[in-house]
Image (cartoon, rainbow over all chains, first blue to last red; front, side, top):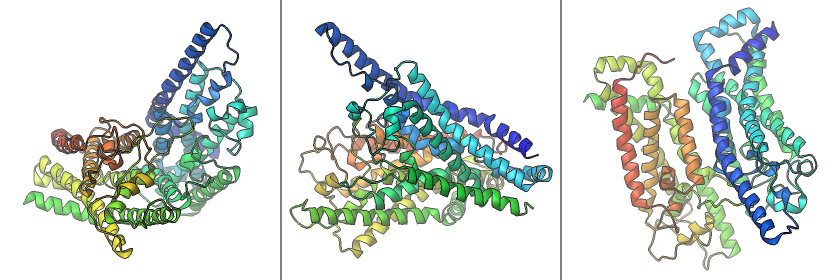
Length: 291
Length: 283
């Protein structure tokens, strides 16, 4: 019964027009990172070609600087595509299915579902579906960008000698992996983004248990993250002479930023988000009456 | 008379019953004032100015609405969006997003039938939107005013140039060498732009879902902070990017015209669109 409920909810969450629209919007935004990055790559290539023609011997073409791992959207914070995408992602991940609990409560669909599948099963399957839709809505455009850049730019392993060209220094989160196993680094970052965005999308479910308005429920996670970012920038990152640890998910879900994060912050963030969302939805919903 | 009644109804239901309209600007203004006071103290300790500076009312307002300096893409300087400025402008868009839509789905339908005029209903929503935005922004001024009294700051109508350049970390090339003082009147334009953006969002909600209209506004705001361009209207809501403040800044007069044009076009487009809008087909 639980498996059927999960399948049904996932199907509703992923095979809907809004999910498709969000993926299209996300991929379109990533194009505004792809185009400037490819332009920069070909400019550098043309320059190298011209240099080799002029001087006949090109001793150091500095190929690690022109790598897939510093040209995809997650590795740069200077193009409009990257800026827009990592600012708007809390909206993009909530739109596909964040509204569903509100709508099902209003229409009475929840009563039919709970009678057929049970309270625990219904709430757990809704939680899993929201988690997956949020995670996928974030990761699919990133993956699309990574694969598209990979069609043009070679996957040269980053070299620490050219550290200024990457923005990832020794204190950066997972920096060792970046310079040794960059594919694993990208995979891990996408996994972190997936988990975080899944949990942030589940915040909609938590809000929907107390707020009845769909638009408010979908937009609130964005404002929670923006508010947290505001608190960090106003009260924590107060000195320009100190290197702080990045606490705001709006900033650390992108590998490069003003400050670096660490594994502890990432893990604690996941634990807090999971506790809040799971206890207010599945645990509470599984015990309370729907009528 | 009919219009006044409708507007009063909207004010009661869409403004007085929205506590966030009052809480958010109060909190943001207070935290911004505390933040600026701390920054001034550290600048004074550092000996940045030749004398011991105290913040004035205009400086606090500039700190809230200022925005950010022009961003020049550089690998060593990742883009960091102006959080305070974004919160100020997006929070009011969020607060004013939903009321017209929910009203239209519920009680508003009865009013529309009884008043026998769609234009009046729409114009009352425009009036409500403008007044809500004005109240929201007035609270920033009120809280800053009270804060300024409490810290015994000055009430000069001029904005301190050195302080502005220091706290917004304006690059040396952008600083304008001019003795012309900046009047605090230039802080009115961001409010007009905010009203224009909120009305634009309300009209857009007649064409697309409110969530997507908010998404469009958020995209416009973040794109404006990234790129300095006369075509991105958000730039006119950042006094730090005005031509009287920095080199290659945006023209304040063009901003004024753009804001008024946006307000007028939004109201007129809304009236036209709402005449043919199906109020029953929504969820």
